[in-house]
Structures are given as structure tokens and as C-alpha cells.
Length: 190
Image (cartoon, rainbow, N blue to C red):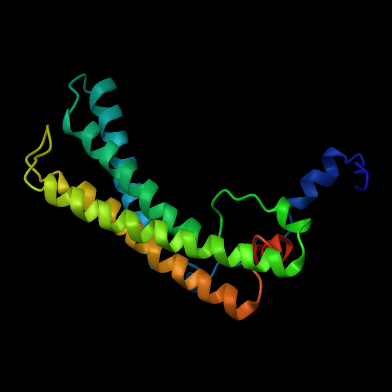
């Protein structure tokens, strides 16, 4: 391994980095789940703010805001996970692939993709079964069906399944995955 070299940088040099132009964002870079997660996130944020405002400013807290915020957080986690699958950002160990022969690393990468697809398919099936079991439960503080939350979890798993299939096909076409060549995926983000 090469030794890292750290050079001193002045406060003025740091300040000049803020003068650089910001990268341009394109709406086409985002998927359906990104926008859906953003909506659910802002709904959660609004509930948390309303809870804070009513509790500390009006001194009369709305009880339903906490339950809605928690359920929105569940939606954000599982819908946001689909974003991570799409851009291959879930936790992964790729150091092993640097020490394996290329053919075996490729085989192992394909195996990981297939196992991921199988896992998400199984998780979708399990959530479908769970939603059937608790279909008639109601939320505690407001009279809404509790399965709204479970349907968002199932939608998250279904999106993860679809995105993992898309990633698998992309990896096959490209001839490598993020596990085999993580540096190629870093360049795409810059």
C-alpha cells in the first residue's frame, strides 16, 4: 500500500472552494422511489414540527403526530432502501474481490446478485402474507388502517426487487459490478 500524503491547506484556500460552481442536478438522475421518499420525508418532517409546535408553543400536544411521524419514518427507511439498491449503495465488502482471480470474482458477484434478488422476492412474499394477517388492525391514535404502513414496507421491498433485477441486468451487460470495480462507480457519482 502506498503511504498517504497530507498537505497543509490554509483557511483562504478552503474559502475559495466555495466559489466553485455547484454541480448541476438533473431530474432524470432520480428514480420514482426518490420522489416518493422525499414526499414521505417531508410529511414526517411536518408532523414532527407540528408536534414540537403544539407541545412547546401551544402547550397542548396533538397525540396523533407522533404515530404518523413514526409510520412515515418506516416508509422513508424502506422506500429509501430502494434508492440504495438502484445505485448500489448498501453496505458491501469488496476488498475480497481484489484478491480473487477475475473469473471467480465475476462468478461470486453474479451469485451475490442472484441471492439479493431471491432475498427481496422472499421478503415481498413474507410482507404480503403479513399484510393479510393484520389487514383489519387500526392505528392507535387515528382511525386509519394500520396496513397502510405495511403496504409501504411491501412497496419498498417490491421496488428493491425490481431495482435489484435492473442492477443485475446492468452488471451482466457491463461485465462487472460495484463489488469487482468500485472505482468505476465512484467516477459516476462525481
